[in-house]
Length: 247
Image (cartoon, rainbow, N blue to C red; front, side, top):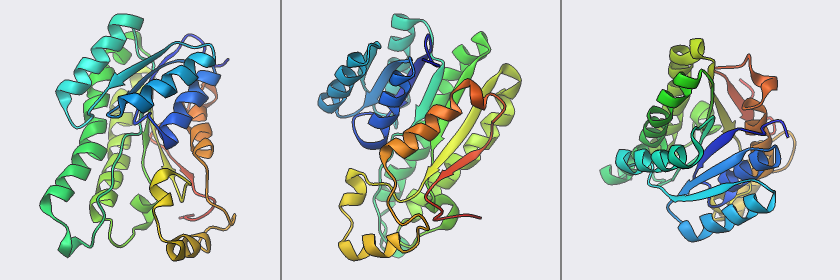
């Protein structure tokens, strides 16, 4: 129970990687506030967290809206008094080749994936600075480092998230707040299940470990970065990709 007494806030927690992160933190003793647009699925995850003996709070959250984020954070602070851990996991894709990409699809992905993290970090930082403790983890992506055709908006948002991670880590390190990123590779989620078989098979040939990752693989990396074992790690990008990208 390394995280006992800690309060975590996980965005995009209704399914996939976000759900796995929420459960991993709860397993280690944290109470978890869960944010997502899908409240029905979110409440199911909240029940799973409670089944582990921890407190849970399901919050309807649109990370692209500063007002929605501020309201959600205020509810957590009112109920539990603090937020020790923030995991910015909420993200969307709207893939297309750049010359065919609609401006609204570019804007939508940047608003959720990058602006959303900005809104959440900005909302929790005052409390973390006051208590002189905080752990922030941003979920980036292997393609932010390696590139990929047809995902210019997604890659721009995730590369920006890595830059944001390093900038904020520099700003708040003196307040005992660490800010890190996790860059998952080819992970088995609802999003990757939609890929054609030929694409999935090609991707597997690029992974030295020869398999797709799991949401638990990513969750364990996040759990490490918010633990005491990672107290001297900040501004870092933890690659969890089976060796898909090694630079």
